[in-house]
Length: 90
Image (cartoon, rainbow, N blue to C red):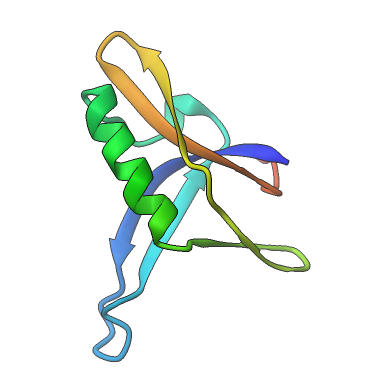
């Protein structure tokens, strides 16, 4: 298992799939999306954990969960989860 930092997310624009969100992950915290407060990041962790996000990896899909907050710098917080991410450059 490896850390995958949430880097961005977007609701699908297809009329048939408006309820689906796509997420992108980074292998390094410096490439992650940033929250201004730990509370905001914690609140989004709760939402992400409820969304039943699946990570597409070689060999199929892996359910994510247990999103956590990490302080990156003063006033900067990032969100990550552990999953079998491919560790490459991002």
